[in-house]
Image (cartoon, rainbow, N blue to C red; front, side):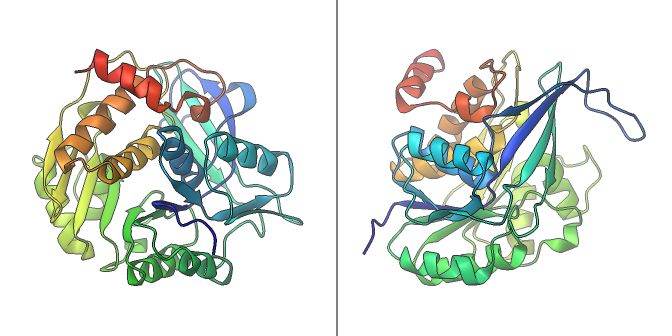
Length: 315
């Protein structure tokens, strides 16, 4: 039997291509991009695993990439972060998926994902790996992989005793997201919460009440809502918590949402409360979005030593 980690990550993998824009384009506006380049950026699953690995966590990634330059880079990034790769493979005949990330001068970003034929994980490929990882404590998954795979693997993981965290990004239609009683915790950002609840932008007065409403709507036990520069909230049977934003000079927010969820889960493994986990993840991301880099979020994800220094700055 192979190693059974504390955390299993099952979500998107890929290779990021960056370009710079003056601002994120509005509806009907044409962007003029410059400095098109490949970066140290992958899908949400790889990012989650690397964040946890760099914090010294015991984590495995389940997924595949093409046997190409992008796939080999993903393998290198995961290995360098100490992620268990027993359930990760490079496959001939497919290309590693590409994500295009527009970076605005103010640090905001817009992400466009392109699928490559054959690159999507199938249930037949993934389910045996989930069952082989019985004994892991947490599964972090999401909708960058086909919904059937995310849902059925989550169901199987829950049956094997894992607590399932589901990142509901991305979705185009709120109806795409279905009830999921087998999921322990869902994670969304503020705009996604508004869409899922049918609320107008800026109309939600209580984010804790919104989190509670999402728990009831989707039959899950807990909800986390990240609010960008305004902090985050959590509501559910694990406990409730809320943190405000930390004033920072925003450089680049790409990858911050992936980091917040992964850091939160690692905090639970360390025995922290919901409130403590929110505070730790909030401080992590406040420092992360200030770190300058032309090479993408993977280069900027913090090691445990760096995070210990951050905690001295944000006591």
